[in-house]
Image (cartoon, rainbow, N blue to C red):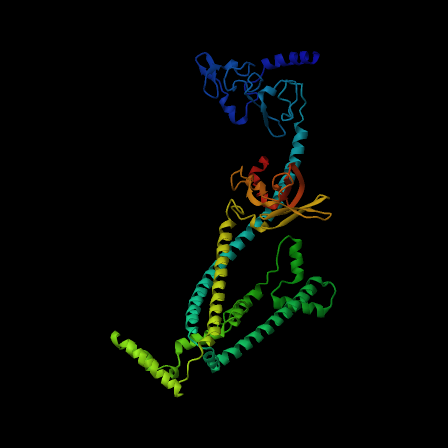
Length: 546
């Protein structure tokens, strides 16, 4: 009781002398100005509802419906009081908490109570806040650099997908022509006998193709062996280059390192080490790339990339189909007769008579041995089956390429989608990245944008906690709040409970890592973690807002 009497004794004279702008927020300070009309001084409520005497502002009596006439007292329950907190950052509290005898933590300067009641702690609070803010700035600066590398990866991925789409479109056009070609061959092959095909295979053209195929396959085998050997030698020389001591004057080692750097187009290892100490990156083999470009300009020879890309296609060419196509285009004069073309010159009424005569004549010629007889119709089944199988394989390859094109187009559209991998593509780098958290009894695994699982550490079946469903639906796509939460739903069903689900809550951090797991509701899990993808660049002009 004595405490409240003393407080009242201190507060009453203090209230009588409250400044008109006491408790006013900085952006409203210009509106607390007296309006003079003759000898009368007035002031208008901020909501414009009424005009009151200037002396009624901060007089501990609520006159305005919006409570704006009492910014520095507790008279209006709906008012807002502003603490200046000199040495720290300003804050606001409800007016009902002003002059209540309690030192509010938001008002470290004690301005919410009468002078002398609450000590001024803003210097200590300000120093603590600034230390925390500087730590946050350092964290965000480091994390934003990693985030920038994620964005750079997304742009590289965009170029890769665009190039892939162009290549796939060209490949599809080629495969569609190939399917049409093979379809014609399959139809034509149904009329050829197996023995006739074997005879055609004895042609010098077909035999030459087989020899060239064998030669190409042998060259491919030798080429791969040389590539493997070159890679092994390169690894040995790289190990020697990075591991030798430049202070140890072994001229043979130094000459070997220098020679490898010149051949591979690498900077000297001492220059790389100096650059790393200075925080810069170097070591791009420019000269090697230039030499490769020079080699590629010779159109007479294939580049290594073209050999790797197209040699396999050549080895998969079906020579029987080529033979049939060649036969279809060129034909064999010995096996054709003008009789087969006579129908083009006969009136329609004579064609049936001619066809009957032709069949009888051919039968007599075959009987006399003048013309080779037709093969058994059943002998052509294997040929037709082979042609149909080749056509089926080509159609299947075309379908796979079309599916690959559709996937690439969908990946490209998702890359910079604010509802997918972010407007800047900063999350693409983390697609399917799996993070784990060991809690002793269980290990929780979250594969970003894929699936979350709970795995027992002492044996037993693991359970799905759900597949990725969405970001934070309560926030606007593209905002940091939107990417601060991931939802994983439709997991394994709990015993006598719902299907398992997971909410992943992320904040800015220099590593992609999981920190803690909890289960607020039955079979509804919550995991907290950090990711550099949430570290936005620091704007030095707005550092005080952190």
